[in-house]
Length: 321
View 1 (cartoon, one colour):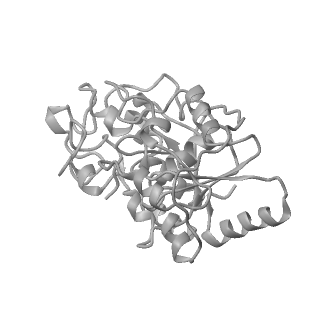
View 2: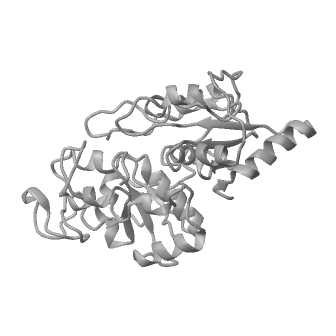
View 3: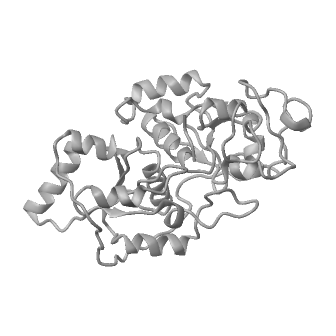
């Protein structure tokens, strides 16, 4: 199943459905959100794709933050299903998510809907900017669709736990999707400790997109990930600050031909547990920060016999949030 849809492809899809009256619906989700800003909804009201429904990431794509859970924990499945029905999604619909920040926020909706069992879910490559650059119309104001009837599940995308994240580098590649300066521990604007999970490889997800906010071609992404140590049989997992932009990296990995697991709690969960070591510097196993222990110490031990992300045997295959 493809990950992306281009603006012309989406325009043709919407137009053909209007002309043919096929009954196949395409639901558009506007997921404008950037860490530290609160103007996503106002920007949506000013201009959005015709018929697009606004999705509030902090309240609809995340549960309440709390000690030990990270800043954007995944919501319970029943809450997410309620939200998807508010957006007007029915069983059998196609969903296209977009934002205006290189798909950094929209990828969270893409990942969660795929995880919930929807297969026909896409990211609008280049988002609102690509749509407007193509000369296609936008509209203003709120869209309030009739409630949908979609039935969602869970567990269709691999995830790893906090304990597994600490041991992942022993069995595969753990990618850190945040900005390089946060990985190295030079700055930390929001989480309690600076640095990275020992053994993780720096892979800022902003490097997966062009200056226009579109994903790089699959061949370029594959070369990039291969240079970071991924191989055809690599078990890959990804984290970021709070599990949002890690979904963007997972989308890029899918485009490149890799499957990857998400660590939902990400560094905001990891760094609040004082028993977890935090490494600093540009290498995966630099000296741990804050006297965390010997080089390479990786915190809690994963489940006995664990060989892959929770619910699976294995997976192969400046960002914020």
